[in-house]
Image (cartoon, rainbow, N blue to C red; front, top):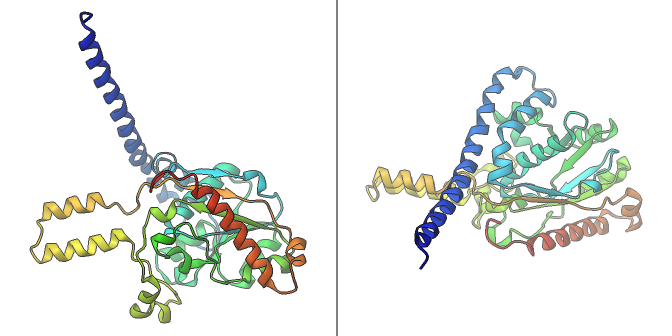
Length: 322
């Protein structure tokens, strides 16, 4: 054996491990370090909750840079399909939309900056929540009403809509690659009434950030959320379920406080799943009209196109989180 070869191999091995560990550590540091920009929220005018706030979005863009680049490894494809004129972006909804919507917000701001705003329809219950009713308008949310949607399109802006809503975003984890708009055809009538194209887009990977067990629809009835908040489903992701069961076990003396702490650390609020968004070819209003006199055929066409896009992205997934 050549003198020093063993030491060299050993040194190279540990050096490689050191570099790999450093990369992992730097990624974690990037995620945490970028959150320091949240201190800029003190500059935001919280008394004005009437419209989109570019300064607020800029702060979120910087604060979530680590999550966008290193934690969720976001990839957006098909920007060339997004027209410069008013358009209706129709997407699927997953993981209750938390990581999905925030990362899409960052992606859009990185692409267009302050030159082109995007708005999204938001459920009415968000406007009944003390904190969210101020935040939602600042990031471009508008009430999910016909008048509000038409106002956005008629003034020349882009509007994103997630027809599946809470029903789709809380679907069981086993259906994570299924597009189900739950027969909500309003977006077809909206596109036809305003003569704007529908741009179908799908996002994959976000459902793995907050895995949902079955029974979320029944939970809306049991908790009263359907009656008082108008929600057809209530999110109870795996993480929250683990936290609740762990707290009950701690209270019953079945586990120690240190074990519960480790349990919390092992179940982060959002799992690090790679998120990919794909924009599809715009479907002009004239093409939607040609499909039939009723919105049904156009609705099914858009849903089928989205499912085809989702299937293509799903074929690329190699593991649960990537």
